[in-house]
Amino acid sequence: MDDIKFKILLLNPDPSKSSKTFKIINSLHKKNGPFEAVFLIGDAFSSSEDFQNLKSLDVPVYCQEELDKDVEREVPEVDNLLFLGRFGTYKLNCGLTVGYISGRITDYDAVYKYFDGKTVDILLTFQWPKAIAREKKLSLVSNEKLDPIVSMVQPRYHFAVGTNSGKYLERDPFKWKDTNRVTRFISLAKYGREDKWCYAFKIGLSNSEDQHLDISSENPFKNQIEEPEEEKVLKRSSEPVSVSKKKARLVDPSTCFFCLSNPKVATYMIISISSSVYLTVAKGPLSFPRDELNFSGHGIIIAISHVPTLRSGVEDQQLSVLNSDFYRDILKYQLALIKMFQSIQTTNYCVVFFEISRSSAVHYHIQFVPIPTELIDGFETQLHKTCKKNSEMYPNNVTVQFAKLDETIEEDKSKLESIMNDQEYILFTVAHSDSKYIKYIAKLPKEGTVDLQLPRKVLSYLLSTPKRSQWQKCVQPFHVEEEEAQNFRIKFKPYDFTMNNTII
Image 1: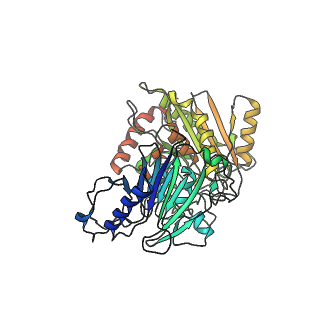
Image 2: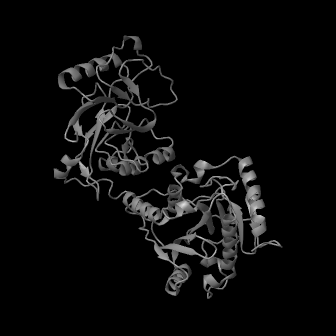
Image 3: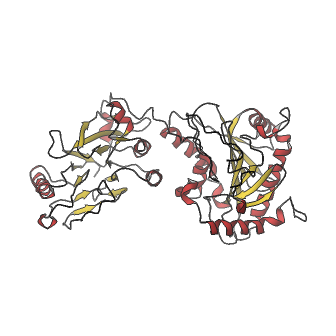
């Protein structure tokens, strides 16, 4: 089966001449086929077309949605005609997988999450990726948001049109680093123009034939970097945004949504306040309520002082951060939280704490998520897998390498203390119990782009909730946040060291 080649036909039709398009398809299928499938890319139909005159099709034809989703168009009912959605994948009967993104990307996060971890044989998009448009010094045909998606799915054939009138280009094939996949990019002009508007090719289920190609063309995506967002005011987030190379906006305590002095701070989400830090539930939680745990459990330990790092929050700069009152306050909350989650009878929980300590950050904080014990053995594997994937997708980003440290070993404790005192870092603390902690720490350079979503990505995949890797996409209604915060306070009260008669 792998040696069988299937014929595929692509056309960029004139939407006002659908009847003629159908006749052309049937004629080509008879003379040059048979085709396994035909794809109409670009805008395939017009509301002015008399659909009743459309004839049946002799081959399965797949159409993308119209470019302008706000324009209502009549949909023809024709045998063998199938309309694809806004984005997704479709598996042909022969086994080939086709990915598609119709029109212009309006919800990038949803599209990216959908394609995360997938590869496709054929990719259909309206716009070009910016990496290819840049080579031709074109800007209006491209969308830079496509680049990380193309890099992820690594299509063997990528078809696009670029503009309403189409733009023809057949780029030389290029190869992806460290894989055996080869991509051919073809953009088609619209029917009626002088340039090529249809394209037929053969493709098998195996890409073995590509291994013998002499690829001399450079991969245009090799220098692609993740486009970080500009630093902006955190809207009571549980996740900082990536730091841009652009000048970051200055966020002072009056506008910082982690500062208690800000009149807009969401006080209804606060659980407890100590001398140096305070405890709050997180917006857009990674985890869900489960059985006896009637709240998500995802929360944040936040510095009261407006400081970007743990080091900067220690008043005596000669003092090790591990010996500071600031750090001791954090440890008290961590111990209390571990004991609280371990008191849950219906599910055994470990607790994972994570933090990013960078001088360019807005306000220092540590997040925590309860993880069912049966999942925690997969943490280290998922951590390395996510880091590897990020490095492949964004080769110009800072390479993140984690060291595994056990504080009960003196040498490991010294390494941890040295990094936390003198370096910028990402740190995971996996608490198996109130006496067993494993640390995973990665040193960060002071310059360069860092994926600040990395810790959340790791845990979202560990929890099998990849769609919750960005907090903005899973923010809960006010009444749910308020109810979960109240349930958290009730559960945490016996362990709150800021109150009298606690049990720790």
